[in-house]
Image (cartoon, rainbow, N blue to C red; front, side):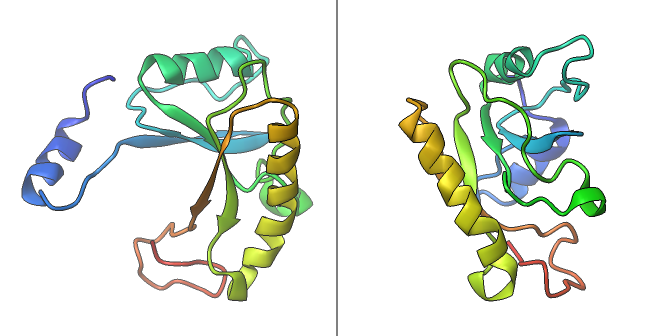
Length: 150
């Protein structure tokens, strides 16, 4: 794995009881993912010089896991890149987010389709883990009804 940034290393030293894992949100026009453990930039311009498989392989080369985020959450132009529209390459992806935020808020809109997509990937022979997450883009401050604190 690539070395963590000095900022992350310093924070880890100050908070030894909490494991901090570096990562990158990888956003394309046709879906986004997290590269859990990644520390280096990878171009999001899929099919403009780099295939998705090459991008995933680059993240794997950093020791990272590649996880698709809310794959079936399609709200059109309100969120370009929210729904996953890429073909999963041979070798698959490491994980897929099947739950996002609390069920009471908007989780049911993310989870039902995502679970179906995960089931389909597994049935195709992909060894993909199911993950849950939250979308806290404000560090727990002024969260609205669509967001959940980590």
